[in-house]
Structure formats: C-alpha cells, structure tokens
Length: 542
Ligand code: AMP
Image (cartoon, rainbow, N blue to C red; front, side):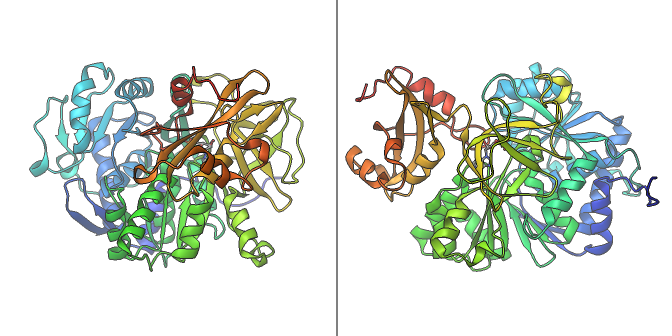
C-alpha cells in the first residue's frame, strides 16, 4: 500500500521560493570582484535568478544542457546557480585553480554551451578559448561599465545578458531526479570525473545540512562560506542559508587573513567554513595583529584534516567552537560532522579535544562502515582501521558519462579511498587516503597524524609525510617541513617534539625542509608530486 501524501518534487527552486516569502528582506552581502561591496536581499536574489532563467530560455538553453561557471563566491554566482538549475539545466561549477589543460578537458567533457566567468579569469580563458570546442557564448559576470575588452566568443556582460528580462517567470516542475549541478573531482590520478547532482540529492543534503548537529545554521546566523562554490558546492551553504533565512556573506576573490577578519567584524559573521589552509592564514593574522573575532560562534573545518593545534587555538584562544567535517565531492559533500553528544560533552577538555580531532559522526542519510581488504566489515571500536565505504541518497552512483565505470559494490557501497576508524560513539577518524598511508613492516602509519603533530610546533608552518622505500620495513616516513619565518628546527629537536605524541615506531626516519609544499586545486597536499620529488631519496636508516 502506498502512502497518501502529496507528490511535491524536491526541486532547488523551492528553496528560493521559500526564501522569497519567508526571508525576503534578509541580506546577501558580497565583496565584489570589481573591488566594491554589494548588498541586496533574498527577495532581489530570487527575482534576478528568475531573470537568469528567462535569459537562458530566450538564448535557447534546454533542459539538461550544461551551463558552466568559472567564478568566485558572489551574489551573481548564486543567482546563476539557482537560475540554471531552476529552469532545468545543469549548473557546472569549474574550479579556476585547475591547470588550464584540465579546465579545457572538463568543459569539453561536460559539453558546456555557455560559460559564465568572473573578470578575473578572462585572460586565462582567452589563452585556451580555441580549445574550448562546445562553448558558444561567454557571459562575463559584471556590468557594461566594468566589461573588459575581450576576444572571447560572443562575450556579453552578465547585466546585459539578463537586463531585458522581466523576472515574471514560473519555476517549472519536473522530476526531482533531474540533474541540477555538475562538479568534477580533482582526482590525483587519471582525468577529472564529473559528479552529477540531482535536485532531489541537493534538497535532501540541504535538509540534513541544516540540522543542529550538522552545519546547524539558523535565521539568527550570519554565514560566510569561504569554501568556494566550485569546491563541492561550498559544502551546501548557498542552499542552507536561504533555506533557513540566515544572512549570507560572500567574500569574492578574498581569502587572506586580514580581509577575512575585517569581513567577520564588519558583518558580524557568526559561522564560517573553509579548508585548514585558510584558517591558518586567519589565525596567523589574529596572532600578529592582536585582533579578535567576537561575533564568531562556529568555524567549520574540512577538506583536509584540521590539526589539533588549530582546533585548540580557535576554541581556547578565541572562544570559537570548531566543527570538524568530512566529506567528498562525490558526497555533495557532507558525510560526517564533529558535534559532540550529550555524553561526550561532559568529558574533560583534553578528551573532548581528542574527539574534535576526529572527523565527526555520520549524518543521517550518509551511512558509513569500514572494511578489510576482503570487504568484511570491521568493528566500530575506535581501534580497527579499514577502507571507509559510504552510501546514501546524496552520494554518487556513477560519474558523468560513466567515466571510470561502475563505482559501487553489489550492496551499493562507494569506496571513499580513505582509511578510517569508527569508535563506539560513532566518531569516525580518517587515518589517511589509502594511497598515502605508510606501510611499515605490515602495519600502517597515518601520515595525517604525523603531519598534525608536526604542525603543532610553533616554528613549523606546514608539514607533509610520505613513505620512502626501505629494504627492511618496505616504507618508512619522511617528514617534509616548511619553516615558519625561515627558522629551521633541527631534525633531532623535531623528533623529540613528536616523541610521545605518536607511537614510537611512527617517528619519521628523516626530516627535510622545502620552501613550498605543493597543493591541489582544492587545497590538499599533493602527495603524488612530493613522492615524485623525493623518488630517489635515500633514508639515513636505509
Ligand atoms: P574533495 O572531493 O576534493 O572534497 O576531497 C575529498 C577528500 O578530502 C576525502 O576523501 C578525504 O580524503 C579528504 N578530506 C575531506 N575532509 C577531510 C577531513 N576533515 N579530514 C581529513 N581528510 C578530509
């Protein structure tokens, strides 16, 4: 027997419709790429998103066509997101930090018809425009006054593109499984692969994201997603904020500590989210300037493991709660968030900190388990570690155009490529990416744990650990460091600092300094490149 409830398709346009009636006068603030500040409301955003949908319809964009963006977090980017998906097309967010050849590959693979770009990326696009074979028109996200001279095909300013439209447009209804967004993963091997989100997956992810123990946003909040919209949907924040009526603040191209601090103070930001490297810049600025962030109640840290010293600094020195989150582009991206429970919140501070260093508890809708090499489930005892597998309605079942073939096992589980433990209270801890873990004498050493312990040293700016061939142990850890302010701590001192913080047999066999550690387009340490750099390195213990 079927239930007798209404069939109301879960479409992302419903979020804007809701924001328009329930939170119409709530502000959206942007530090624009043009260099000034822009303010308006969700009511105006909803109106202009409908203009976008009308303009795309007039242009001849059909349902399912891909419209790309190469853009920072701005109000125009959000308008495009809703406008494109709302009319039934697919909003394809491209990461501008990728190599130009990867951008070409991605845009061609997606068969994007229109590409909407910030002024910032016009010179980059001019260099690769002849290789972009499917793009018919470039929309430059600015007005005619700021429109640069450009050789891009059919270039038009965004404001001119939508200017003739009335905004009188009814969002169409269609199947909630229709594609809404596309984002390519910056995989370290092979070509990037497209994750094709649906309206249903985005809506369910939004409901789950708003829960108190997940992102926990409310109409009281002022939210600054520093994480870009081109990095896994800015972790769902541009859906969650209009859904609950939180004020949304977009930093445009600005990610430096000083600008972020000013924005936090000026707009009284209460919640913000980004990868650890961004928070390192903010914390450094706060320490150097002696400034505070009094309005801030919560910082979400994800994308890479948040070091213990960073969590401690936010919570102890600045009174800001840290929410350590884990997810993937393939997971829309939220998988787990580090909110404590009634029981664990009563633990002493050091033990609470231990838990906050873990990547959190699974969100309802994102099931997880760990398995051994033979796919047998391992116990949730906080000790056993294995391959982290996930399934749920906002997790990819295959990549766009079936790239990479079948990605689920027979029971529908997706292998995240991460290695993790899960404790009896449900807290999951990422040990490593399975290809980064150091295999020493049949046991695994977590490069993440070693790196996080090393950056706890005040004279270490950044740390990366890779496995180096060893004739007896297979692999042993090499610790690669970037010195803080050029002060290179001697090897023995570093090892002494790590002693007691990690198991004795985990202590690195050597320590080397580099000027810079390479990063991927989403801010992760590029281990492949480091391994290449040190491929002929001989350990002193060899
Ligand atoms: P991406 O799809 O670019 O967001 O990358 C997803 C991957 O980033 C995950 O599979 C993890 O390896 C890593 N990751 C994300 N969040 C965390 C975290 N909090 N701690 C450790 N690794 C993380």
